[in-house]
Length: 253
Image 1 (cartoon, rainbow, N blue to C red):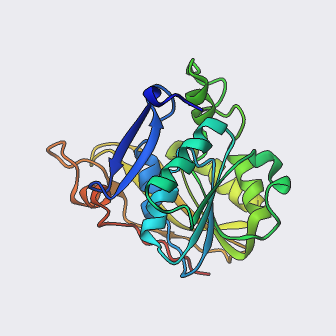
Image 2 (spheres, rainbow, N blue to C red):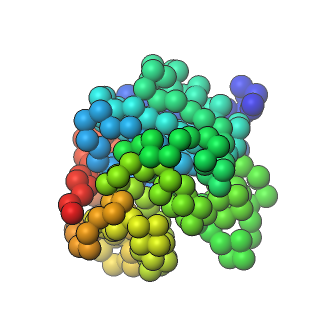
């Protein structure tokens, strides 16, 4: 566990949520916030975030869906401890449970078909693509060292109830790989949203919803632009930061 002087307590959603993070280690980024606002849950759903880090996605979802219950799985024990600490300070510990474990060993952590929804923002930097961060916490969270999209989707297939849903965010340039791995695990892509820096940029990320055993048909939503022509956050992004905007992803069949 990190010492107190090595932690920060940060606020999001205009102060409505507080999250503990390590000062020099892994810290959540914009992609996690975007994913949290893309997720849609049915009332009283049971959802899990694989590789939950400091718990940022779980905290936002617990506020957005007060009737649902959540679990978080994190391989790094220090991050799992911070996530659990954040649930307590936000008084969400009765609905958000944090588990320390490895997605590759999922069968020894949870029973099969125990969740309605699986969410993950997986490490997506290949081991041979650029310099690996010297800080181990950042390296494991960002690079495919102890987890990858393939392992997370294998775990999702095991965890999902029939017709369950999956939500993820991934680099747009790896979209083909993403869709292929979804289908390899009998999870049919149902809704997609591209994320671009501005009107003149290539897509950076793709938000994707899939349905276990779903029929073939995908809905392509309007893209999300982060900045406007004046290099300021768009109105949609301002809504994300205040918690007043989300990207509903109610899957079809």
